[in-house]
Image (tube, rainbow, N blue to C red; front, side, top):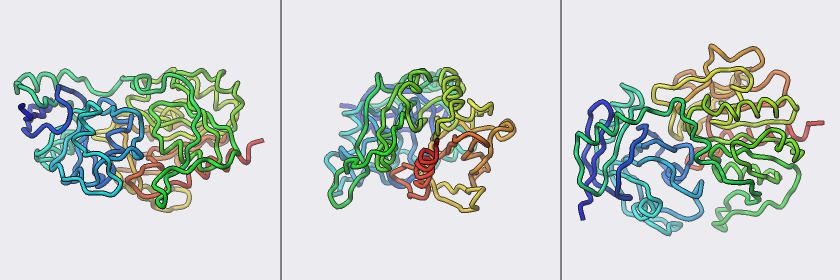
Length: 375
């Protein structure tokens, strides 16, 4: 069986390699991620829907795959690009990366020059791309398919990755001594989490703080959420253009007006900003990695964070109701906001990011504090 593969970019660049996942053809926005670990989290993160992810670290696969590290039920990304597919050797591993990719239907290519690819993306910005894997291909057809993908702007992908109906979550954080997740033994707050593409580790961190969490679909109406009388509302991460989620922006504005504490991460943070009159913009190549420095403008502390986003809140259109609380030290883009009067705040990065440090776990503590202080 032919296991060759090709990656073509919309600018005409072509890379030849080896197929290591599912056979087929896939197109999407090509981005690069600078994390050295956490490839399983990346593959199963719904925020990567319609994206072909290039991992800049050269050796991928050495820790294998295990059932506990999945962030969602599926692999949503459009494709994976790596330099070397490494042999698996880890005590927690139950599966090889290549087998996992094939099982999840993820198209992937290895043995290409990821440094050259990353330089192209840094110079030109995120480009559309197409992977042909494990089958006969035409270079011209691959380039044509890459050019046909119009990008993520104006795409509402939250509705594609959200849950089909409400469900409860009670699982806590992972225990290194037991290699399993602890159960939530406390019950202090009722939290409704709106699923725009939520990651399981977010739910675990909420549960670990004594929250009884109910996850609801992205299109849930504010009235239905408020009828549950929650102590707080969480707005999750997710893929696509936040401006395309106008239905969610409208409902979040209604929820915020009620005075219930709100905490948003990534897409949820962007939707919260839009609900308060801010604007968002497409970035050149976004932030994707586990080593991004962010400054807390209030405490002046610098934190190392996990990031995954291609859109940002436009600082020139923040509005008078919001205070900028965090900024990226890479490019100065806004990383955090809070409302001047209402108990609502958001953060662009991923406090739950398993491959990164735990510097910003305290944001979940802040959400808990707001719920404790609510009348």
